[in-house]
Length: 177
Image (cartoon, rainbow, N blue to C red):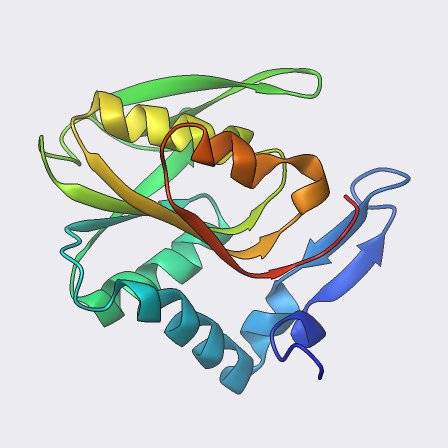
């Protein structure tokens, strides 16, 4: 049986560099039924769970996170790259293949004890999501879990996040990187 979500995700070879198979979820989002099914499936496991905020990781996590926050009737926190948010922020550095990067949230975005679901389109090595978890916890938030459309299990991101005691789920998985 064909995976109705995976079948709507375009694979672009050699992007952003040679040897990478880029999993492009914009084709899934372009399809009204596919996008609806994706949001519904990302929401369903959390229906009835107390969630105060969705933390959407830049940039596709904003699209998904906004829709999920709407469905769960909760707030939305954008997790952005350094320098993109106005006002006072808190930051978390994380490692990349070559160097480091930084994500931020507004300093007043999360109140201590608020329950937060982290959302993004894809988990690969898990570095960005791990940084988001650390950032949310430093702000006083309680992580309910992480939800993704795609897992690339060969890169170990989900296991890295689970090592932080975080429940993670993805709607589909692709072998390779």
